[in-house]
Amino acid sequence: MLVVLASTAAPVRSAEAPLQLEAKILLGDVRGRIDHLAIDLKRQRLFVAELGNDSVGVVDLAAHSLVRTITGLSEPQGVGYEPSTDTLLVANARDGLVKLFEGNTYKPTGQIELGSDADNVRVDPTGRVIVGYGDGGLAVVDPSRRSKAQTMPLKAHPESFRIDANTGRIFVNLPDTHAVAVVDGTSGKLLASWPMDKGGNFAMALDRDRSRVLVAFRRPPGLAVFSMADGKSIASAETCGDVDDLFVDAKRERVYLSCGAGFVDVFETTGPTYRHLARVPTSTGARTSLFVPEMDRLLVAARAGFAGPAAIWVFKPMP
Image 1: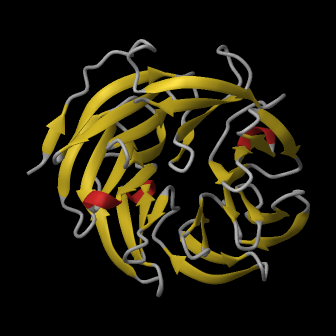
Image 2: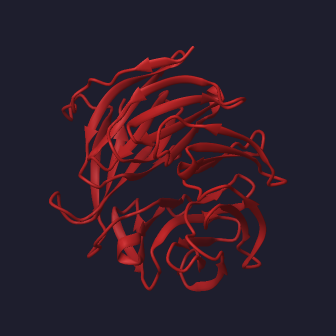
């Protein structure tokens, strides 16, 4: 049975919020849109894809300071850190290159050509690196060999995608075809395609404890929950607008959605439903984020604007 949940909550006061703003880490003179984030847990360094600035910021989360800015990039959209090779990977939209950097000094070590629109980067638990790109494909890239090892064709450009470590399946948002593709992560074969009845399915997360796929839409704004096994609809809810990132906080049984409308929506998992808990104010355009369970923090990227200079807003989940 599909459960439809209307969101009527107003923005909460800070004393009531399930997320408490802990710090704002300035990114320097960064202009334009900020895209995705990744983390080096060992060094507690956050990588910020500053797409509109053609740069990547490196932030020391322990010291709450900017370490350096990597410049000369070409619309960086996706970033990823692979610990076994100590490599930072930056996927660039304009030239289709995945550029590689040494993980401590950030010295360039090579590049991998994907052709066009290199986008989201994912590193699975085995260290395999997968990048979405082009008019429809996932590429498995090898940082040590600086080469593309495998291509998985898709029917449209992939936006957010997630890897199920238990089965090896990859769930991929294809907003141009209003679908979620399910791909065998070993063979690259398309296993299923789930049609979506809304547009702009950019953000995705997996609720692994409940074997569910969570998809956020932009047109109209909403959250939908599907069975990981067969794509069956389980629940839906209204959300804030312009969602670009979505994460599950398994410890608290919550979901966080960062929205360009200037909010983080928080949902609470109670039984089979996803109940709206709070709408936490951020700033207009702050639509990308990263939840780091190991540090128990939600990191939201705020672009420069009326709310202030570009910064990483550090939120501490409560309680």
